[in-house]
Image (cartoon, rainbow, N blue to C red):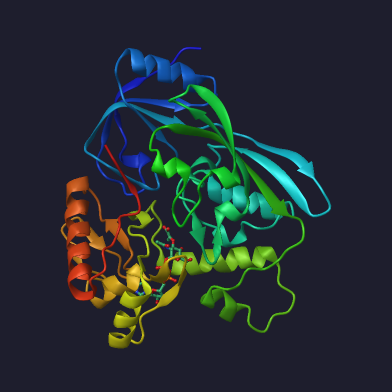
Length: 337
Ligand code: EPU
């Protein structure tokens, strides 16, 4: 099988932030056999490889040295159905939102709260995508990947993926594991998850709740406050919601009684969007970049911005939040190179 590397490839349309970026080489991976072959070829030529999914959670530099390999492995296989569940093995290159919609049309439940998250199926375990009270790790059975270090095909059971809030083994070892397939165990019976306040309010007086209705409600909530990357460059939440210890939380809470907060493993989780809004930066614009006017957690590219423009804005946001609240924000999308 030949590897067709395209030189000087424009990645502007291949990253959701729409940052101007050019790859030294680009290749679309459509068969898993190409992966070890590409790793050997890159090693021979001493070129780094960036494995790209939908480009939804990346902050790219102006030029990307080496090879950008986009995973386009297709396919959805039904491995098993029981009275309770269905086991589905899905190619990394499938588009997340279309896959979610398809599962619901088949009567397989569990992913409805994760509607409209941009990106590919293969990227979903990397940052353990989560929204509206559900994290994808709750529905994952295993993740198949090629380990570029040991040069072996591996299958990780969910409990071995080190899933955490916006975190996983794959995120902690950037570039090492190339995810090729994700296997999901979905429920045949529907158990609504409506803990997120706007969903709870929407379905408050309803007794019969259909998963497709929840899917539609999630789509509505998202489109009402999150910009569509195809019209306004963005990578969703640009910062993680910070977790502070109990003492720090109590000090903040006594000063700001309205501060949104949620339980977390080691203290309380705060809403970064609220903190950014409180320092007056919601809707702030600095040249070609800005803080989204409806959701301050999202930084946007109005067109033609570079990573430097965005990073300068991110630094300003972090500095102001640190100064007012003593809370350090952590960037969520991965910077490369
Ligand atoms: N808030 C503000 N101002 C803002 C934004 C938010 O005051 O500009 C307040 C809201 O009023 C609310 C709280 O902050 O009280 C939380 O806001 P929201 O429900 O919009 O959720 P979030 O914590 O800002 C997280 C995820 C989103 C996910 C939503 C819904 C992270 C980093 N972000 O945002 O994920 O869709 O919850 O579950 O955890 C993403 O990762 O790209 C993403 C969009």
